[in-house]
Length: 176
Image (cartoon, rainbow, N blue to C red; front, side, top):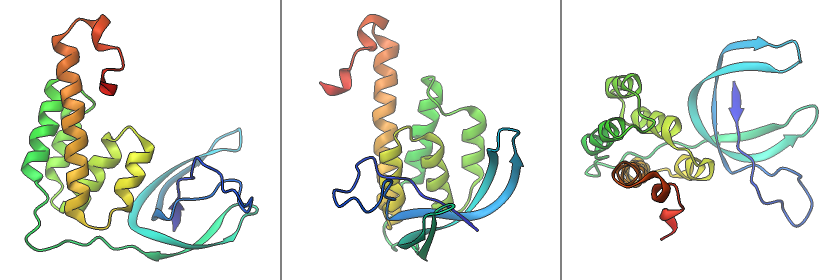
């Protein structure tokens, strides 16, 4: 098992850790590992669960943490708006966004709602802080809403860029 833990950008003021981790991470099984000549490795991880970090056990020679499974809560009567998300993914593809036909076909085949939302968010969310925020949301319908909101914003931006001259579209219009 191996954990992927993002590090916070802000450093703690007490000086205890140089690179403090976020509280929630992904744990998985290493499916592929290839060592490069420069000493680095390519690793493909199959995510198994989210965990909440309990403590850092040690820092050297690499960080070891202890954690507890952080289960997804699926509430009855709280739909994940899967069809709306698929429509937004299809629109993103038509607008020339990051959703390729292959990605769309794969995501549609994923039957488990939790896996569908998590794979779509991981694959398509560009902002690492936003991706971390989605990872930390325990209720599935809330993660789905976050993903849908992000897709709608991205699609509006793409639509605007498509319909207006490139000298206007490239500006920081999302700040307006």
